[in-house]
Amino acid sequence: MLLKTVLLLVLGAQVQMLENGLLRVPPMGWLSWERFRCNTDCKNDPKNCISERLFMEMADRLAQDGWRDLGYLYLNIDDCWIGGRDSKGRLIPDKERFPNGIAFLADYAHSLGLKLGIYEDLGNFTCMGYPGTTLDKVVLDAQTFAEWKVDMLKLDGCYSTSSERDQGYPMMAAALNATGRPIAFSCSWPAYEGGLPPKVNYKQVAENCNLWRNYNDIQDSWASVLSILDWFVAHQDILQPVAGPGHWNDPDMLIIGNYGLSFEQARSQMALWTILAAPLFMSTDLRSISPRNIDILQNSLMIKINQDPLGIQGRRVIKDRNHIEVYLRPLSNQASAIVFFSRRTDQPYKYRSNLAQLNLTSATMYEAQDVYTGDTISNLKQTTNFTVTINPSGVVMWYLYPLRKRQLFQH
Ligand code: GLA
Image 1 (cartoon, protein in one colour):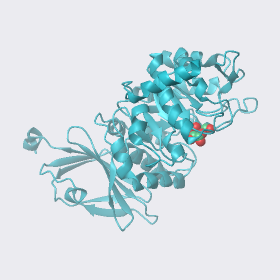
Image 2 (cartoon, protein in one colour):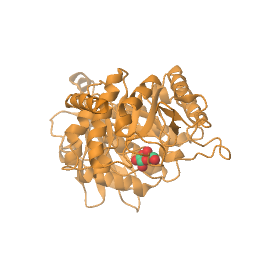
Image 3 (cartoon, protein in one colour):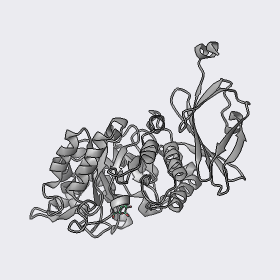
Image 4 (cartoon, protein in one colour):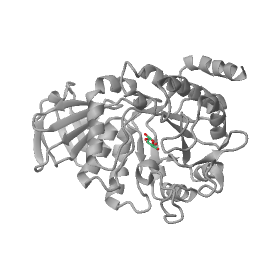
């Protein structure tokens, strides 16, 4: 009876929007899953196992190596941290691997100016078989995360039914709100329903979640990046309009710095995720990442574009028969980001176009800055033809902005 009352109260709250004021721009940070998976072998692999040590070392890197100051604030724990539940049913972390508990890690992250994210699963078990959050545990677990001073929750969906998810995700959104602590809510809800209407009601998802996984897990390969991109582009008419400040599509983690991408492909993932207004969660070993990969991830103009306050997701606007694609994202101050992307596998390709062909029809004079080289391309009128040279599986990315009158006089 009591449970029923609690359920009704919580469900009653679901008609309101998730107005927690969080994530007005896509979240940035680090997430353990893609790179460190469910490695629990701390005995033989103490440096890389899912443990307090791993998260503290990544926190140190985020704070000391420039990441935090560029906006990479979230330090997010994924699966395989849970040890069980105590006699009151409260979640407890694995005692061996997290001897000081999650509140300690949250304090550590906060002391460095970072935020801590945690993972649970709406269902009997997490995807890797650890204790999940069943409907009767949702409120208790939300309270536990708030007491630990957690700042984000990723709620996965393994071992749950559609109807449990329909109930459970809004229930968790309300339960997090009810704690009074600002906790950003990352839902895997749409991904477990195939990611598309009519099974997914994106209005309802956006009313309950700050970000959500729509599609399959990323793996450490270019093929995986492409399969995610292809799915997002194929369904951009559905997905593009549902993203905005406070509520984002999530094509999954950045795999830059790992084993599967060439230098050009790493640049492409960064540019394409930025055009998609995607969350930028790195999942790589920040203790050993190469300077070239750091440069890609710490490109400040790229980050400025990703974090643009309008929060408009970009779209593919051209699919050329020569295997060149063009993506466009409108930005604040009448600026735009443009990505010229090559799917070719032969040699650098000279792609000729003009702004009119990209649907930029304003009569203004533009200037562009190449996001990776820093070069400036001046005096771009609607019909000025230009040529960009795009490497195989690479990108050229432009930040395009109208020249103001004053700037025009100077030319
Ligand atoms: C699912 C999620 C992944 C990761 C794993 C953990 O597959 O989609 O992102 O959290 O579970 O087990």
